[in-house]
Image (tube, rainbow, N blue to C red; front, side, top):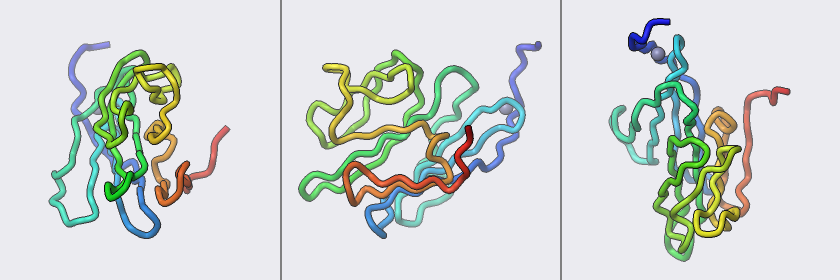
Length: 154
Ligand SMILES: [Zn+2]
């Protein structure tokens, strides 16, 4: 196989809607290269943004995957959403309003554990983007309600 770079041919892969009740918190969209599987992710807020706002970097095919982290609100601070590309064993930072829950170790299943004690976070949930793409997460309750629109495989 040649080491030449793929001339990516990105195709829209789907959308994940994150809401609090009927209010949109963020919309996560993904595009995937039909040739090599490289993935690009964008996060849009509820406001009107141009198409390039919120676009994250292109993730070349590797053992890193896109992880979506959601957290519940606290007091007047609304719930939030972030997407990070990471591989098992990596430590990632996600700015959440929850004390001690902003630095995470990526588990072998790509879910985020608190880096301080390796436990499951209390106020943060994480998903592989591929698990929740074409779906919906409602943060008005905790743990959040998750709906996926595509048929479950295997
Ligand atoms: Zn490609």
